Length: 486
Image (cartoon, rainbow, N blue to C red; front, side, top):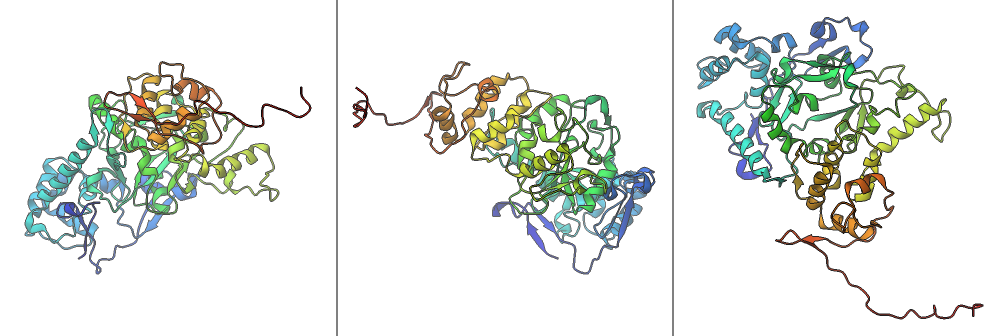
């Protein structure tokens, strides 16, 4: 069987690797449907891709995923794993019995065990101790995240997400259990008003925190749609980013310092794929629809502060229905539709790919001027990845807007800081004079061009400085005399 490193550095290959299924293993065709997963009739589901999935990915049902390993017994547990993986291991396999016993002792359900073992099950290293390897993976991931945050600065802004939703096991897994080779297909979605949301406690994330979703949405239906879109792993903020209200609020605050600023990484995969981002425009898991007022609403996906970093290089619109706005044909070659609302919708959708140029400071700031967020601080945080930097400020929910903006500016590339200094036409009005305040960049017109810039640097005393040439004295010939004027 073939084993491949999934770390970016060769020295990690002894610790981080995955084992592919042998060529003689062929997974059977499986089907999961809205009815088997939720009890809803398929005909009642508006989104066709949410009705059923049929394919040869090693997908298990939610019912099996929710089964406590302890209820299967050690032999029944192994039999179910063999059936799922297409193997014929026995309890005599070195270290396998102790591994399964640990899963039972930890009160794992089958989905959690299956998800965590998927990357190592086909290994030939059972004799060396698979549990030891899994512990090494976890330790290395923990150490990587510890080193990424120094004080209030993130020194590794390309850090991968802490958790990923494994669609085959229907469980949220730590990144170390998934591997660098499995890039998740991320989801971007509009947020419904709080009165239209419900907090769901689900085994998918191990009941770690309540998951806020629209009242008419269902995580199992979203899973079916993502599988139909070709995803094996996905990243969904409400499932993979620890939310308010769960056990361990102090843990959430600590994780957010690192996890919130680096969210943009998962939407900017270095590997081309189609699609790069899945977008629910009308709310997570909901059918894509359009009515008067939607595009102007503060809840519009187009106006969401986080959308700037989530648009990705290519997109697919989820929640598509046969009678939805995506299937309306234009009336002419100029892209006009039968209503002004439809025309505006399609033009906004087409323009999203160029909404932000990460090398353009003022383009990103202009884009954020039109965005909204329930928490004003999210507008600053939503620019962190867009503005680009070798380092990022950590997320501090106790900061003021100006404090957060100052931290972001101080972490920007020197050329980007130079553009703020040399091209913004007014002095700052919030203490620092050489660059605009947060209020200024959000409330005043910004320059259209960035074709000239200098570098603003910072010394050991945290003093900002730049090197520029200036003309102390000069004479411009030809301006002293103007024809026809005395």
